[in-house]
Length: 99
Image 1 (cartoon, rainbow, N blue to C red):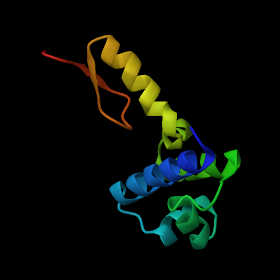
Image 2 (image 1 turned 45 degrees about the vertical axis):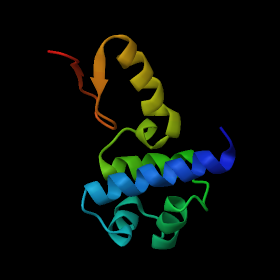
Image 3 (image 1 turned 180 degrees about the vertical axis):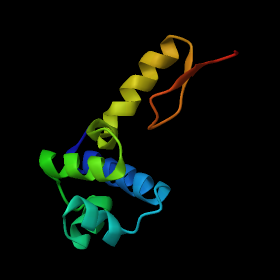
Image 4 (image 1 turned 30 degrees about the vertical axis):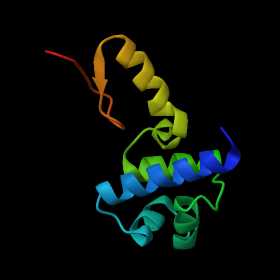
């Protein structure tokens, strides 16, 4: 996966989680102690956040940092699907298909 694609997907996940929590960019920025512009640029894929910022963003959103990383759920989904489970993206609970 190319750098631009990784940053774009990270930004999409950040936006999805932020809006699901009902937070504005300003509110997330305050909790994560970053500038609102930093949130905006990260969501559009124009910013490459450090591991420390990813950790702070995840903590502010109440998720594990890996959830923000593009391949995290994709890898889990493949493993779970092979085991007969249905994956709910961004959630750590799996349900058996057909049960």
